[in-house]
Image (cartoon, rainbow, N blue to C red):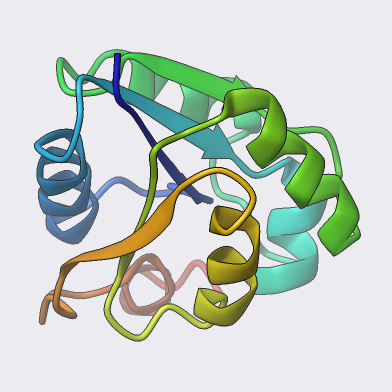
Length: 138
């Protein structure tokens, strides 16, 4: 079985997320989503985030037919902690989008078990951050 690993916040699911997950799944047989903790989302995105709790975000992702497994991450803080997760999941591929700010770190993690594949170019659709601003949630 060829596992594909993706990671992220997935706070407000939008078109870009769906295309990314669908294209990632095409690279293998089993799609695993590493879902960031509420604490890490707040640290990365700001005090008004996440909009949905990790439990809610997990339920949304699990409802998608393309997702095979969701791992609710604890508040990871170091590269070594993320590396340990990658070793545990042991994916053949870590899928990312073009311009992923963490691409270099993900490539280092992938060297432990598989490869990084850029599955889609940046999709020109509002991001979660842009949507929260439009809705007056930030």
